[in-house]
Amino acid sequence: MQGIIIENISNLYKVKANGNVYSASARGKFKQEGVTPLVGDIVEIEELEDKKEIDSIINEIQPRKMQLKRPKIANIEQIIFIISTKHPKPDLLMLDKQLAYAEYLQIKPIIVVNKIDLADTYKKIVDIYTKTGYTVIATNAKANEGIEEVKAVLKGKISAFSGNSGVGKSTTINALFNKDITLEGEISKKNKKGKNTTTQVKLYELDNNTFIADTPGFANFELNEIKAKDLENYFIDIAPYVEKCEFVGCTHIKEKNCGVKAALAQR
Image 1 (cartoon, rainbow, N blue to C red):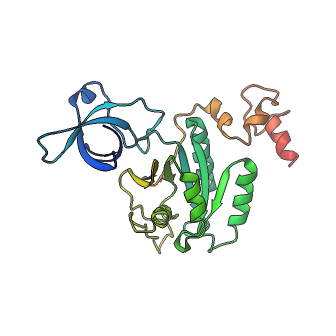
Image 2 (cartoon, rainbow, N blue to C red; image 1 turned 45 degrees about the vertical axis):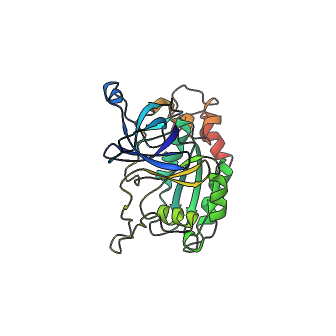
């Protein structure tokens, strides 16, 4: 049977196949080949006659469309980046880095601005990123506001949810399913920062062929995989103007005849 890995706990895999969830282990050949099955992998499994702790074994892993190193997950088609208007305050630098990383991976990014009931500043954020060319959805997850819009963009895809702890990832996922399936993070009263409650990657099936991943929060998100000279290509509001710079390797900070600076001055 062919299925998808939805969870991995200590190399014991849960695989959704033919409407059922199987507990599976991976054949030893994968370890010999230096391959580790990942959540999101499409796999071929074989049911075992002697069913004890496991009832099947993973025989093959289909070629991956892509994979993330952090969190470790495969075949993601889009990433939902959630920020909040307050508690914690929006980290737009982090968001910009995440958006650039999504462009680098060639995964469609979608921005969700949550907790819109706490501050009107969300309108400016929505306006900026919508004009940049991104899909932006404003939500109040606890009141189910905007949840249907989120559900619509998830249809038929494998999507990962990402964002700093406390922004409402788990609350949003619970609202999508209309039940508590994940732990909701608490906000520290002392420093107003979120306490990360998600400790492992797991796929939840929202609908037929619609899966969402609740992943550990990105406390420190870096762009180490992208070479410094290539970074400008993954900011979609900068990339079109780079070719108008007079010098190759322009940093777009202090150089003369910079296409990016010229475009900014005209806005």
